[in-house]
Length: 388
Image 1: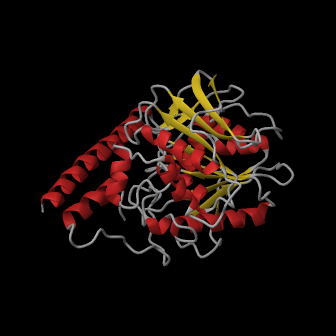
Image 2: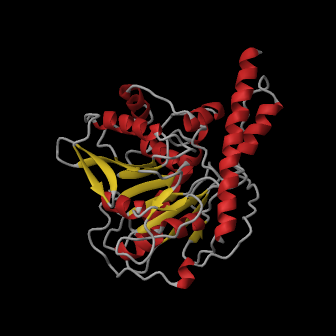
């Protein structure tokens, strides 16, 4: 009983911290006039597979594509939508300029009340199961529809989307050539709701070999491995910055390179560390955005490499993570169109009521922590958005 009481107190404290962060984001959105944008870019595809994770598939294919174009899967964070994150991060604008396709899986409130991807549920983060399987099915549909080069499929995401990016890189390293994890966590840093709270707010340290084994055990793949771009704010209070270092340990071990970077440099005013393999290829990069809180780093405006629009968890800091991630993925070598200027229409965001998603016949069964924990924990976790 003493252990149960300690767990309840810890969960209550983490829940309070989580709700405070969400309320602060909502207040910031209200004061700045930002809300969820209406997007006329994204098109929904309903028939893409069995969809065991009960996710929505939205995508954008620009009018002009490069021959055998690339594909970037973009995963939004908690409380966000696909259209909102596209508007803020600027990925569809990048796709239009450089001729690749973007795919936006969207979480449904029937699965998670805060619209977080369920990166902490084993049933959603194991190969051919749950949400990762749904996203894999979306990728296959996009490949067929747009003639995607299978060697140029990438994934990126913020926060819960960043942690799910790590899960996709681990479970489908044969599908994804690389990915960008923004304010995320290592693969298998949590396999339950209490562990998710602990990993986010306290962090979890493991030896590099232990982290690497979690990735190697997620599939039968034995290489080559996806390249990984890691982004984190040094002042992140939602996902502790030490998680970025643990992601580095996980993927340097998987790639078989030293934990010490091959080189360090300054890009747009921020430190960048790079790890190079024996072939001389840059396989891991890490950006620490000094003083930045929880969110996606942006450089907005009409600058050559500026994309997106600031908002909650979309932070103007003078460097575009979307552009630099696309560059690391090898998608920016040749532009197919000029960068469009940001028009008033492009940055005007009209208030839109949150979408009311109804549970579909394929909705996933509710997860529980077991009868010994009790309703009090279940209610706290649902309120925190970390349980269905």
